Length: 386
Image (cartoon, rainbow, N blue to C red; front, side, top):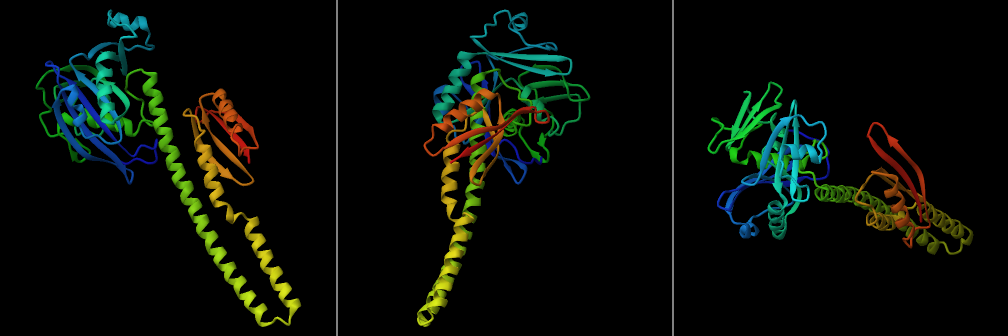
């Protein structure tokens, strides 16, 4: 499938961790990337191992994990308009918010709520982090598959893969779900035109959701920690991409600066030669020298010699940007103009306070702070004098 610009993640990994009855784990790993606006599968690997062997798995980039199997409890109910602690206890009387991760997936007239003990999930996440993986999303059950149903080559009102049995209506909304060991699709599954073994469907779906996390309604556990980790990771990637573009822009400026300097330096040498040849024409020499100085002053006036300074200022600003702030514009003239989005005005005020503490900042002014109805976000504009 083809996609345009997105959150900044260009490659990531999805891992289904199937908790087996004997205490080991069946782990299916799919790595995907976004290349020339197309999602491509880079690799598919499968492991069966204990928790202490997870460190041997080869995983690159940001990771989304989906837990299935023993310990993952799934409850179906009429659609829950709001999820409260009491509504969760009605489904699962043993539920305690401090002991369980919860995932609510709503589809048409039904809600599917999945539970897993935090101690089970956290031990797995800890093992993956020790291996070096950056875990940004945690899902439960097969429900992340909802994001890729339109990509799969199935047209019936049911879909079976790797034991998962989905009952769907004509609009591909979920009616029911069950798991039966050994249940298979009955035909070769494909993602668009690329064949995919059915045991890797969940891993691909988890990776796909992470890759396009800013465009999809995430099917994941409710956890502030994971939300913050995802926001921080995507903000860093976006800023890195913006920084790369800015550096490339200033590289071009520096190159043009060099060409202009070479041109004017050559002109200066030529004029100096003429002056040497015509030493008796003092008046003409003064005129030529004045022309050279005027041209050099014009070069300095238009700021061609300030590229390194701009790059330094961009780097300094980048180090102060809060995780909850998304930048949309950064421009420089005699001052720095910054535009972006934030969750609330307090974050912007804290950032202003942090900027004012920088030794190179002479002043910071909040020119604008308003609600953008189209973006459904709070937008702001800062003016930083240096």
